[in-house]
Length: 420
Image (cartoon, rainbow, N blue to C red; front, side):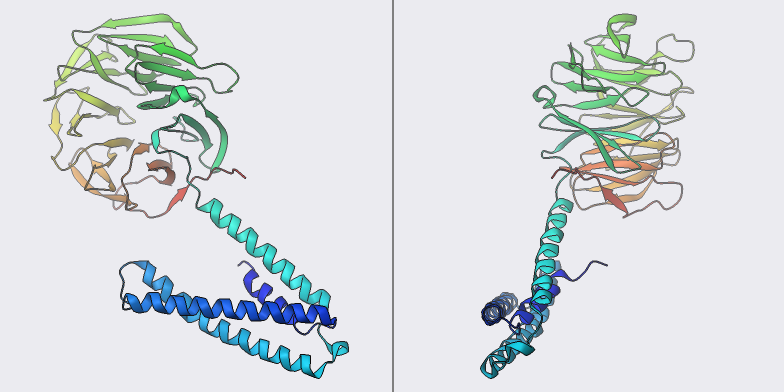
């Protein structure tokens, strides 16, 4: 429990009105009268606000007004009573029997300083994670590191378990990002921007590397990354983007890429087809033909399922190994989504839905997971990670990943940038 700093300050002001030095006593009397007048004015103002709305306004606002009004009345009456007692003591004139000036001044100083400190802490707690809306999130495979990127081009790296900001960099070239992914170690980031991609080194000492023409990417095992460039996909090393290790030529432009921990790589094409480029016997084959081109893909951690969504959020679940495709119900718009296990898919439906849900692809059963009351603009999860990151406007929250059964949670922690 924090000390009641405003109460200490008020106590000190009242005691000043009884202090031994006459000039200090006069100051205390004046401060007490001014504070009493201020509390009276506050009570009157709150009463008028409540009366204008009939004390029946919707939401928590009226509850706060009513609480403050009730609390301000005894404080104002107590201060006026103290002011009257100070005046009587002044008339009697016994400065040798007054209160200790050191005690009175000490209480005022501690109360004012403590109140100011608590106010700064409150302002810090209310500060958004980013200064602009979150554009993308990415979680390292072990779930320990999170990278968040906002629309203004600010990239931040976080220690998830410690809720600690590790590093931040602002680069105008990263503004307008559409996607973000990390390497296996969670060290280097690849940011997709209009017209290409930018590789951002982990240590921040080297300059970002620009890769023009890249419109989709997926991180592969073995420190490789797949880069889609028009109707072809290049496989390169994270640290050697100039050296192409493998290349796949495709019959239509690539609109999305996804990979899993077993090395499967699937490309979504503009003609609606989903093509497995690597994995199994590494021979390209068509997995499914969607009604429209998929622009977002995600593998479940064990590779059992592949979720695909088009630009309107219409989703399908595909079994990449055994074949087969099932459309998701029309109301399940996959605006942002991520798997947390082979049987649990989180997705944020677009307006008017502003909740996160958990979906079991085997049964096509949905249930609420997290409801913050605002539109979710990003979700990042990792296989087996205990927590999942969710972006809402300029804020990033970390919440317990849903398990089987009822998964609803309201225990979400906001990540704070510890700026002064």
